[in-house]
Length: 219
Image (spheres, one colour):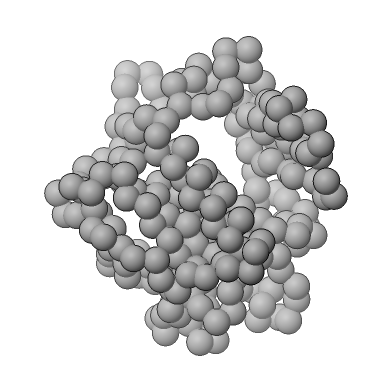
């Protein structure tokens, strides 16, 4: 295969990650990106895959040179950072790779994906232009649990099992496969894992928001 799959993560694999991760105990203490890249090469030898232990914010030049970016961090701050880079490049007439975001909603109640670089439709920040207001396409019902938990001496975490990350990965893979075949739209897709805690959000082309602080002025 041509090209290189580059995995980026600033953390080491910790015992707390074992419950919902493809890596096993032999990877504890190893950089997550490096350990995942090693596993991928073992399972699929024809894939060129490397891992980089770094914060994505430190790799802006590398991002500009990429052919495609998959944001699977599930961290809104990082997603908005990547979105801001894309919108800045667009406003300055500079190239920027296509980009897909995939994330878990609530405590694993649903998963979503979005291609945020389709110029005809909304960017990632168009999902929620005002952080003080709900997202434009509300998924979680009001009674759905949202809180982040934490135990004594443990980092905070969202209590969901491996099914949610697997579903998010599956949705992202399906979206990317469709895009490779020329069917990237609808740009925003949702899979519901707990119908009792979620609204039925149909696949849609996310429209631009005139109040979006990232791309609203250009819409």
